[in-house]
Image (cartoon, rainbow, N blue to C red; front, side):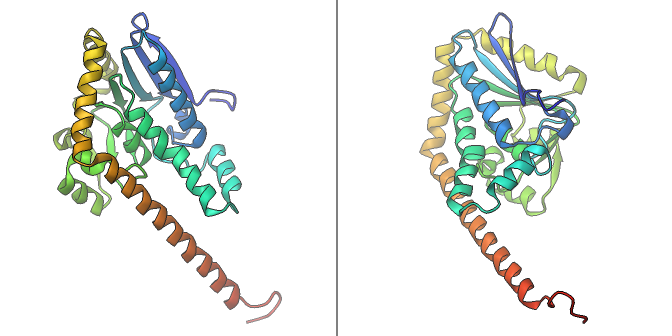
Length: 267
């Protein structure tokens, strides 16, 4: 991949009935950066606005679905430089733009959505997959649940399972994820796309309005249980944690300055 390559590829199949959205940063194992998220958001908007599209599939190019948030690519370096001395409110707005708002928009797209997961699906990868309605995984997929910006984990696998897997930062395989209810089908890697497309084609044959009503009804059930209130509350907790970490970092830096010997002094 060159610097000019797009972060996300978009194509339609089956005479436009199925939209395939591909994270296109296999070199870095498709980490989530602000440019990546903006491209994903645009792709899902395009698919939603296209009346021919009945089903949307999200995948990652290469051996991994998504390895988490971007921490070392040129995207990440540029973002850190931009936010290095930014006030807290700007960094909070960045977090909302990169994680919170687009993830909820993707979750609430009225059309059926499918995550097709190979390899690593950790941290931000979990968050992206969880925003889809259905998850198909290859038998070599690896998942890790953490306290994400959009913290759906208890909704994805249940409260007790969420604590069990998060307390020791455990990775678990595709079959375990299926047993926990996060993944719906597991297939060998060489059959994953075939099986995912077969399911998408069956879904695409149904009345799109009825599909929208089904999705809406399921989401309304979760709303009655407090889904959005919980997600907003968890995001606020994350913001408070970030402010606390910044405060501790500043105090530590000040302490280091006060205890460091003057330049040139021998100790």
